[in-house]
Image (cartoon, rainbow, N blue to C red; front, side, top):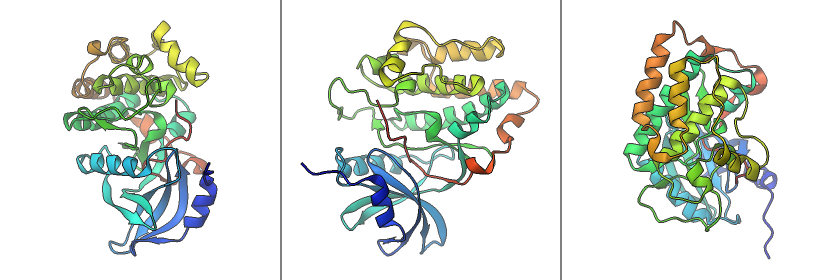
Length: 305
């Protein structure tokens, strides 16, 4: 049996390399299950970039993962999505070159305290618009969560990490009885192993917005506990949130997928909620130095359920 090289060792070995004579790797930004993400520099275009380098010795098919993500990103062009610039191979490793977001993650932002309802609505409207673009292109993200949402210096959200996304017409590539996604944000149909379509992203976005309002995970605990909890109780909606916001979150997190609104409908409703408020200052709360800096486009949390 071949042992997998630790991510830290891989990151150390690749540091300061130049991929394809063009992309210099400057520092490691994070590691996921199948890839390492670096802050890099495009020597030809003279701009900073994020470079996702796939590890060929993972249990996943690195080449297939790289090809699938590259093909998906090539179909998507929206200001609320991380932009892909290039894809290629270097020394037997596949890589993706993407937009580098200078800022923080929504996960770090929430850790500083809950967002105001108008701030959460404004952020949600941007994310729903980005999802609507992906959905209308036939792509389901399947892993919407705070750590995959990057906030730039102006606190505009960018949805990242399409590593487990799939076209709606794609053949399932996962092993039966395996949950694909992050347990805390899985939709009921994902937990039950059913077909995963656009409504799964809406459910996850609803839980993300709920977390923005409360500052905590709605379904916490271990992966199995978190996944199963939503089958037994609906999310608890905050009583101090505006009634219209609570009603929308209730529809977004409906147990039956056909009861959830579309991403485009969510964007319209969230925009209306944000416009009702006098300010969205909650999006511009300064983040301490420890939570700032360049964010990897697609550095996922290592553990998935």
